[in-house]
Image (cartoon, rainbow, N blue to C red; front, side, top):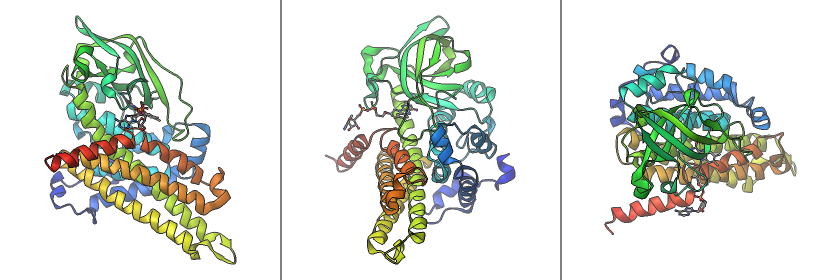
Length: 401
Ligand SMILES: Cc1cc2nc3c(=O)[nH]c(=O)nc-3n(C[C@H](O)[C@H](O)[C@H](O)COP(=O)(O)OP(=O)(O)OC[C@H]3O[C@@H](n4cnc5c(N)ncnc54)[C@H](O)[C@@H]3O)c2cc1C
């Protein structure tokens, strides 16, 4: 279906000739497709989705038809075989229309599809990609109530029993847990080994006796997404569902969080861009003291500050995505991108609200939703404080100290 809509992608060799300022034509087409989709399908309903906490099933299904729900998955498993840079553009444009939809697409692609495609065995990929349609959501369950930033402290246990693994514990904050039919769950096979005892497991939720989804958290923003506990009461899964090695789960999680940070930073960029556009549109129509708000230096300064932060964040996000695509160790760039793009989203939404005055504070206009949606990009996938630590450690190491 994807190929019917878009021209075939050039081989990944184009990455070598990549210029951050000029996207290759095939990526411009993807960007345009998503921009139009956001304007037509998401922007008109984003406020209603938010108000009613309604998951956008119909739009996710259309995005799956366009090839955007298995963006980086190989074509052999129903994917589009695209790059992280393409995924970043897709998430940015969709988030410009609806922060919740951008979040759903980002987490599913970056943390489930990409990880299974990257690390799964042929059998695992055939099983999990094969059983479900492209629009089926996969979850990523790493965090627990006492293990967020400190992931190594997780306590969900996995015990070998004959041909099975038995998992017991409660995962927290799982995005799309209410809609997901499958997921990747992290548990410790040996708590004495701390982070080296963590492993990743594929779970088919439909076949997992003892697995229940907790209540949907009542959140500040991205309210059209579900965020729930995943309770595992001695859930028995086949031994073959171990993803990667017994003691490789922590490393997998860290590698995957680099990719998730590009996705979250792209979500932040989309929200920031939407805030900038809404602010300019409002200011152009609002007359105060006999002239358009756009003529006011203070408003122009706010617009200029938003624009420059968005543009510089965008360059960092694209740099991080390209580094991942080139197989480079991109941890520092991903942390930089997420930190700056997250803060930019909050900054842009805040300034959009200020430019709109009272109208920025009420639900008739999207500014207050932008602000609520922006905040999560500074929290999930690793809080900003942790991103700063990652950047500092890398910079100090690079200098040989
Ligand atoms: C809406 C939502 C969706 C989510 N989706 C998922 C998901 O799909 N899958 C998943 O696994 N998780 C998910 N999470 C969990 C999310 O990644 C964690 O909430 C996040 O990593 C922070 O962990 P925490 O909440 O335990 O905060 P804590 O780790 O307790 O951090 C709280 C604060 O303490 C400080 N702090 C903590 N550690 C450090 C440090 N090392 N250096 C400096 N300061 C520090 C910071 O100020 C930080 O903001 C989601 C969370 C939310 C809110």
